[in-house]
Length: 223
Image 1 (cartoon, one colour):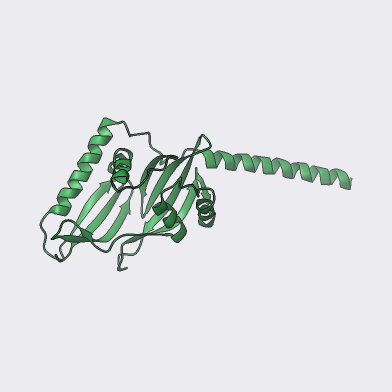
Image 2 (image 1 turned 120 degrees about the vertical axis):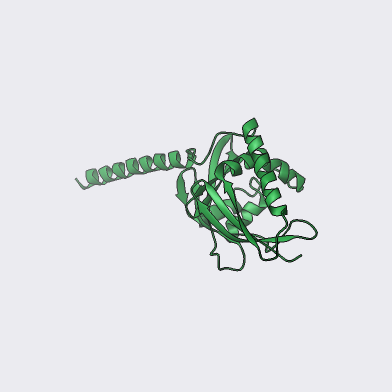
């Protein structure tokens, strides 16, 4: 009887492990809802990205008094269109090598949070890794985002696990160095001041994240 009960417990335990393992595998390999269709060859996405980039440039280039503040809206659709059609070109212009395993980058805006997701080729299969970040308090002197969560597929994973993966499995630069640094340090720091041109400076004062859009408040600095 004891042997039978022991074997029965072992069998049940094995079945549970198999079921849990199957569920977890399905979750870590699943395509998350924030992964929108490919836009790289979409003419509409290219036009939207160009319009958004030119619009932001016009707003930042406008003459303003020192200390004057203004707010710009960036929609989720605009951000993803830019990432799909212009990010790789921009990275190349900055003399950064585009990771061969990278299959795309997406963002999703939720209330108070931004999800930054990447599709990475792992052994011929696509895996989706995402980081959830929140803006720091407006009262803090430096604008920054703080890492608050991580997922593989649709499965939440400890940030410490993601750091270990970034340090070991992704040691061949399958993700950009800046992304690796964010994972390790847990903070996306932004420059205190951006130079619009030789005479004008602006700084970021606040981020407000709402569903499907982000509001960015800038302030004009002294020349």
